[in-house]
Amino acid sequence: MKMDMEGGKRALREQWEPIVQALGYKFTPDEELADFCLEQEVLLYRKHGIPFCPCQGLTGERGHDMRIVCPCIPWHRQHFDKMRRCWCGLFVHQDVMDPDSLPQIPEGEVD
Amino acid sequence: MFVRALELEDIARGGLKAVVVEGVEVVLANVDGKIYAMTRRCGHENAPLNFGTLSRNIVTCPLHFAQFDVRTGKALLGPARKDYGKTAAPPKEEAVPKFKSMLHEEMGTHDLRTFKVKVEADAIWVDVSCSPTDFIMGPD
Image 1 (cartoon, helix red, strand yellow):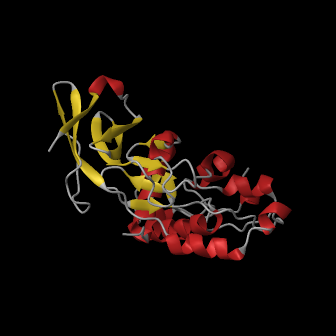
Image 2 (image 1 turned 90 degrees about the vertical axis):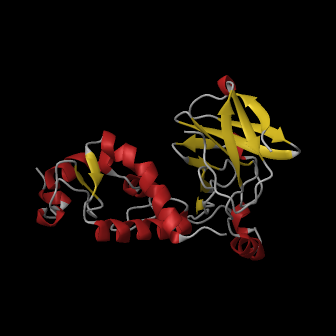
């Protein structure tokens, strides 16, 4: 049997879990959002061979594009720590139980 | 029928090892002390998976980076495509005939056949006679 979308989502989730955990983050408890983001990541992986952030545009400039490979937390640490979530909301701080209460703050507005 | 395939001490945690069991090429994977067995050939283009990498329960093929769950043989992701986004592809890449890409699409990536495993007397025993649809697991 050929691979399917569910298998792809499972692979990304299982590989990213220990990485984001070490960074102080976890998958959002909003399962619907997590599932949607992972689906977009699988589609991006199939297209590019790299799971880029589904919420940010590729520019074609490698230096920029490699900073939005998921999980991109290390490259946007100050920004994401301020929001207690990543830009898409796929990952949130480990103590976050209510992800809907977390606002998106533009990068330029972070001190 | 179970056949003695390898000494347990010969495969480290997180390791992959190729063995031949009754003429069948098999890869053994040690996932946190549990042993799983699957066919050695990738479900995409037959590359030898023992040269790949094992991350928890996911094996990644060394050739095009297709990924499989070693517990079930399920194809999960891949192969990774070459995509240059908005950057122009190198001339050599542009010369690759389009039908080759189409063939890759048609080939797909298929699940791996997995085999029954047991650990007994400090050795790993594998049964390659089970059907391809058998799911199998390492010893508890």
